[in-house]
Each structure stands twice: as structure tokens, then as C-alpha cells.
Image (cartoon, rainbow, N blue to C red; front, top):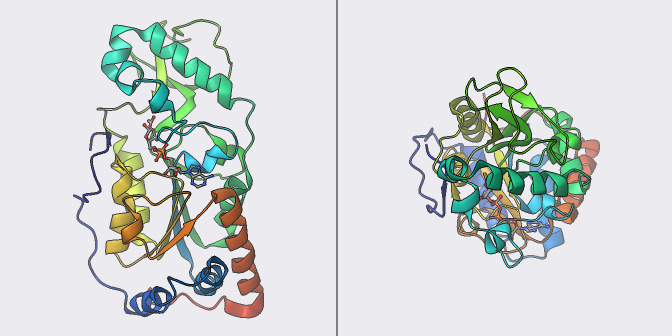
Length: 296
Ligand code: OAD
């Protein structure tokens, strides 16, 4: 499926349709509490998650914003200052690889000194908190890994990886600024490109399959800091919802997904995720960790 911005939220992937009855009941309970204070919502959710074993998280640029990485949309967003079609398409790279590389090298320089924030750290801890945990990110900044997440489904690639345009070999290169622009493949001398997905390109099918499988299998999906307008990533919560998962959105502002989310936490990921984490862990200590309901 090609990478497409603003393509709406239509979900074209077939997904499992069997409803999970216990979850429907849980949703109804939470649904009745939508208007309560944020703190109460956190309690209800934490109670629910105390015995939920299968959790997926989809993150976007918003989770790295508190670390100082610019987001793409919004007033200060990169796409307000730069034109995506001049910098983030295969055509732009073919036309002027040096220009594209200068932009990526600038972004690498911005990200290099940046540290993960409490939002990233909580998600790294969830790898061992939940038996079946999947972290899917649209971010290319590598901050989830830097925070300690070991298994990350990087939908749009990784800015610290470079790919040979001739042989597709992938190299981990952290030098910034790069010694030469455009960089050359150490094996064959061909030009290297950033190992990221550009507009109009397809996502790696294995990565995409892993993301859709995790979304279809989870009982709860957190959607954190994404404008939910870029496909196919924006379809993942819809796949999860259709399979009966609880959808929890954390974002500074409502998105096209908000109306479909079961719970929406307006606010900063770096504050809300630690709050949720504390409540979930407290619930586990209080003995909420029984066998997962509604799953065989
Ligand atoms: P966007 O920049 O489109 O959206 C960032 C979202 O994060 C917005 O909805 C903000 O409201 C929210 N946000 C900002 N700060 C936040 C915070 N502290 N806590 C919670 N939410 C916060 O970024 P993405 O949705 O990730 O692709 O964009 C998707 C893709 O479009 C990116 O992967 C990128 C871009 O073109 C590539 O470059 C390959």
C-alpha cells in the first residue's frame, strides 16, 4: 500500500470481524464514563488493563515532541517550513540527491543529541509489563530504541539507517554531519539513500504485515501523538477497533480518529503515559492480573 498523506481514514484491509463479547461489555462501562474527569478515566482504564495481556501502541511524531523533535503538521511543523514533495519523494531524490541529503543530515543533527522522554520510557517498560506487546511507530528518529524498546515496528524506516541504491544493503551510520553528501556505499560505491519511506513509496511488506497482525490481535491499542492522517498507518487503529480492541487515544488535540476512539486523553504523551503506567502497575499489585478475558 503506498504511503499517502491525508488520504483519510478509510480502512481497506479486511480484518477479523468476530466481536469479543466481554470487551463489548467493558467498552459499554467505559463509554458511560466519557464525560468524567480525566483522573477517573485513568482509573477505569487502569482497572481494565490490569488483566489485559495483549496491547499494541501506535506512535507518531507527538511522542517525540517533548524530547524536542519537531512534528510534521501543526503550526511549528516541518511541513509548514518545507515542501514534502521537494524533500521526501523518490522524484525529489532523483532530481537533487544532495538537497534531499542536506535536509536529512540536518534532521539527523537535530535528533542526535535528543534524549527519550518519559513517554518513550513508559512504552519501553510495557514490553515486559504485557505478555503480548507490540510497539508500532511512524517515527524514524530511533528514540523508542534509545529508550530501551527492543522490538519496534518502524513503519517509515529509521533515519540512522542508510540504504544502497544499487544493492539495497542497509547500513547503520550514526555520523552527523555525514562526511560526504550524498554518501557513497562502502561496499560498491553507489549512492546511499536514507532508509525511510518517502511519499508515494510502498512500505516494507513484512513490516506492514507485522503492524496489521499486531493491530488485529490486540485487545487494547493506544494511539499516541499522531495526527492520524497518513496511510496506511491511520488504518491500524481501525483494524484493531474492528477486531474488538479498545482504542485509547492520547493527543494534544482531537484527530480524525478521536470520534472512533473509546477513550481520548487530551494532553501530553509524556505526562499521560506515566500516569497510566503508575495506575496499571498499582492495579497489578492489587491483584488484578488474572487470566485475560475473552481470548482463547
Ligand atoms: P504529525 O506531525 O502529523 O502529528 C503529530 C501529532 O502529535 C499531532 O496530532 C499533535 O497534536 C500531536 N502532539 C504534539 N505534541 C504532542 C504531545 N506532547 N503529546 C501528545 N500528542 C502530541 O505527525 P505524524 O502523525 O507522526 O512521515 O505524521 C505521520 C507521518 O507524516 C510521519 O511519519 C512523517 C510525516 O510525513 C515521514 O516523513 C516518512
